[in-house]
Image (cartoon, rainbow, N blue to C red; front, top):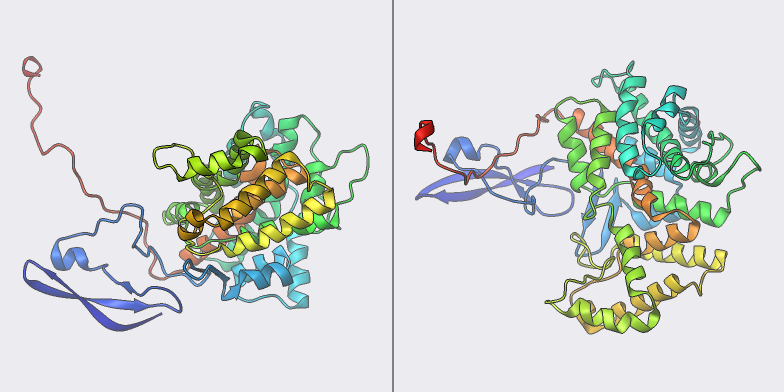
Length: 430
């Protein structure tokens, strides 16, 4: 980042200058931190559509180009050439690991994959039919009560321990939430399996027989994790940063991120896609629903198409589309009713002039829901899988904020539009 020029703001005939900050990619930003002191005014930007809340070296999105970079590397190359744990190492450390670093990091993660046995009993406090995300919020937040000896966040070693613990234990916690919900015994992690393979073992294995992960599905999950690892300053990441700005412990911050992700406008989008497919029901009704989607007076929305950030094809969607093909072919589900319906919907939306002009391309949520359903993951668990993967990004963003010399506790301003100052009247005058 560099400051190259000044921007001039004229208020009531008085000109005030502010530095213009330039990043590696993307829009320049005006540094308005002194705006209040210089003018007595604040900015109003509901939804933060034009506000940079931080400086970051982690992830960059170019929505117009349809580009997503992790530490400068295109997501397409990372998904093809690297495992999820290599990507996790990259996000945390800024560079890809060499052979030795990869082995050491994978060993650390495997050594932290079990959870405290008392935490296992924590699940019994929830109803069996509780939503898995509600369970996740509680269990992840409770980790601070079990792992509180490494809480000096000024110490890089302590921060690394927290990172390793959360990334390692998240698959175990997610799988346990699923097992508890369906009434099956918890499966302990197995260190000889890959990160994705171990998650599949804990999700789908039982004590009755040995579970062997299908390599195609194992790779599909690994790619899903990579594609969801980080995504710039989205709502849940901003929540983690804001919570962390108070000095809160990382387990509480990640729990806050999970709670935010649970919202249907954020992490619940892939679940909404499948609900939409169920509503449409059959290929013969696709035309009817496409017509409804174009009608401004109809409340029906085509879920899984378009994105707030991407004005071009979401690069993650292209990769997920390929993974979707691989999984459906492997499992012989090409002719499944819902999957045929999804393919037809995708085909029409990509060819229809209305959707093409508005750049409403299929997004990553459209395909990830289909893939997860094909694998056998219930709809209620979709956002838990998202949270599992995004924990890497959340922890990386949290550490970046904690170690930023300029960071301060988050304190947004407001435009107050309530009642003017007034005095409390006597009781008989109210």
